[in-house]
Length: 175
Length: 186
Image 1 (cartoon, rainbow over the protein chains, first blue to last red):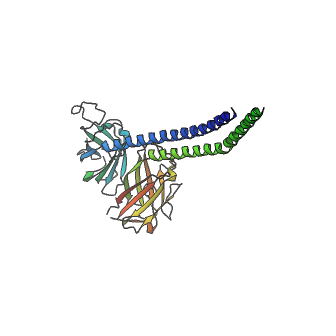
Image 2 (cartoon, each protein chain N blue to C red):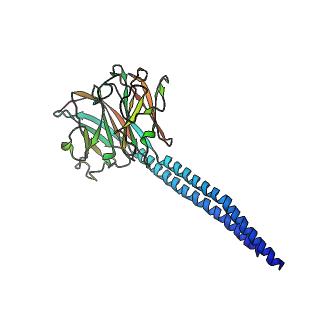
Image 3 (cartoon, helix red, strand yellow):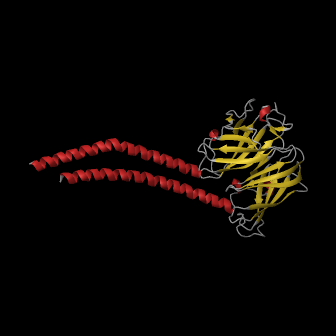
């Protein structure tokens, strides 16, 4: 009887210790596993993103406005345009500028901002989402003090995909 | 009678042993468990931390850049300030931004500045290179957010030569590193 009770107490201590260690390990495994899952998902999203710039042109009448033709040739849709980055580099003395996203149309741009339009007649499927296979146009209005040439455009998406596109000199100026 | 005595003594011995074991090993197990938990949380945070440098722009205009009053390093033939644009593409907030470690290395290896000092006042102090985040005092860098850093090197020694290649390194407090090679325009 005494030996059994003693053994029982010792075993209970042993199992309590094992359970405490297991609980800690399990908690850590769940946290690390969730982080790995999220990280892999993010990497996958980045690897599926492939946006190309096919043309950069200045508006012939309002020279402070530019149009950047983009194509989604990846395997994932992009919709969070406000998390995208557009940076314009100039050839001359004008400092490079990161343009602010504007959710309105191209006529509502005020200066150093951009918006994106997808031609709903050409791509009627989900017109506010930049789906794979679609073409879109980035409209930007630049706030320039004097005429200059755009030399490059850096485009970044929320997934971390980055495209630094050398435009060649594109003449722009104040409106 | 003997059996009862032996049983009683064994029970007392067992209870005492258990109390001693719990008293001595229990806290150690608890502490060990807590440390293991913290270590795993840190590992998870590191896995969830990810950022990408998507543009580095050396400024070759007047120094410091407008709207500040130019006071030194006119930029003729050199760059004295660099704008770095970084996006948080991970799941975790990166904080504090002031704990970022910024380093700059020339492609020839002749110029190297590591752990560049942060200028808490976001000014243009003459002396060793400094960096700060814009807007000034920004400390929490949220997922999906783009961070703007400015690096200043007003001394002759730290002016970047036109046409040269440099690599900027950004390292977070938990050891996640990104680098970006850029060329100072000719």
